[in-house]
Image (cartoon, rainbow, N blue to C red):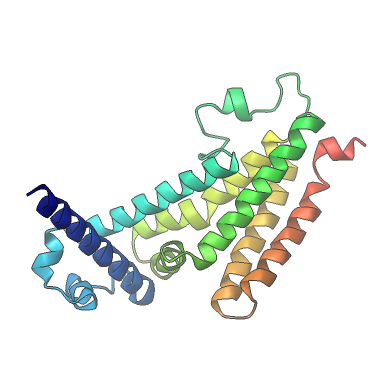
Length: 231
């Protein structure tokens, strides 16, 4: 009996994942608003009723996809050793992210590894957003529907707009950059990030070449670290 329960549980998890991935494929192709539960059922090859055994509706599917994205973001940040949340708004900003209280800058010893970790994280996330079977279609979905629903606009800001720009600025400030310089350099990094992703989508550049271009932007940004300018 225990074996039967385990097999049934595994089968249910597989079906749930199949539904989730089918929904994401259709959302990225036709838009969230342009996809029905019937479309999703047809994509998976099951009845609509079978979908409702796993998800209450399209909103539940979308929230499950967002949960996958949030969990993946946290894992990538933990692996890279960078903040999972925006350094300017996270609870521990004052103790771990903020510039020294005496107005000084992050020490040479600290700024270099912080920048290296942030660069590695950004390049890792670039590859993730470009090629991951969940992140890549998720990005296309929120691009398609950003002007159609308030929820999609919110997700676009969170993942592709003001959210990551603020995160980048906060990380650069934690390394000692002045606010205005961090804003300018953060915008350069994020603008390149977005543009290069679009060029990959349109096959105007190979993923590896795009990553090399983003690395060059970081080389140009690194010289603005005050700890380096002091030498």
